[in-house]
Image (cartoon, rainbow over all chains, first blue to last red; front, side, top):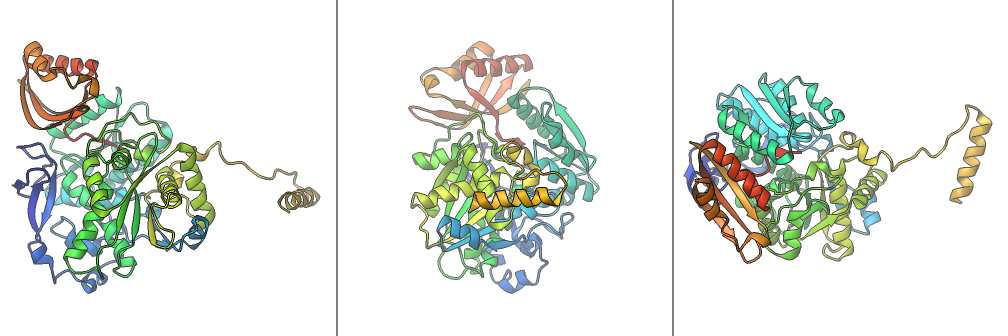
Length: 415
Length: 80
């Protein structure tokens, strides 16, 4: 089945053959994978998807790869949890948590995009993959490159804390620490991606890479029994995940796989210290004003997001809103999810929980409607965010009498 | 000759200034604007700069010193 038309410019609509390119040569607009939905209709069915593996590859026909997955065979199909305790706390009827904090192998949704990019790199005959990252993306690229027996180059700012490097270095990539400001490192990596014939996953492979995020949206709909929820709250960094979840829902609708009308409102969640997309939505303007990030939600800290405009458009089109979360609210969000559902998410998850709570309290999200909250990474990656905010409750000497006294004290405090 | 594809973002204070003209005049750069959106209080341009490598570097530095945000055309190359 020929499923791809190739690539298409999101701005001027020009077509390009499927190749490792990402920018329209005419208008410099971003390129996106263009599918032949007419050929896919009737071929991709609920049954064909259900017959696939319990991973993101059950949606392989809607991803931009020609053959089978080359790496990351177990990525995705993460739990969609009915969060009854959290719903009670929020005073809502139906709350779900899509939990990519347990996405295999590197514990974030980035495994979805990287698995597609690395598979595509192998299809195009590349022997080297690369990325510039301070966290989740670096972990995932290094892991998948190791599995695919590819060389990998990971670029990081030289001042990145040692603790964040370990989860990348363990896979034996070539780690390049670049001295310079964020802008200088950013520009250098763009130039490297332009010069070397490497699969720079989020640069020249971005059209393919970003499609992997759709699987997160496909899974939500399938796991809800092919129904669309009334609200999805998505953390935004570059804005790509937000637009791709929306694209996934629309694709399933186009293919006739969704029951009833699409009723989902897409809501964006960002930190107050780096929230340019939410600011666009709140001010109802398509002008993105870049910001200098200052937030504990490092995994969302992109000050000039490339997909910001498209995320704004998707929020508008769906009737959704946006909400910021302060650092304090982010921590409270992380603790709320852990305390109610036993899920330890990273700061980005704290942002979505906090934003959801505020949208509910503002009445933007009615309490009697179905809500999906996106949790995209694991809390064990960012324990420093909670370091000074949690304390041991009881400290005692190693004797039973000491414990008895402590327990009595605790009970008297809580009674 | 070196080339560079960049996205310039202009703050409100610079909207009335002939920034692109100065790039051509003072740094002898060839400018090819591919896409832009300039409003009364904010603006951006996606453009190609072409010129001597040293002049390109000096031009970009001048832009940044003036308060123009200069990003590679992809913008968020570094991802968390």
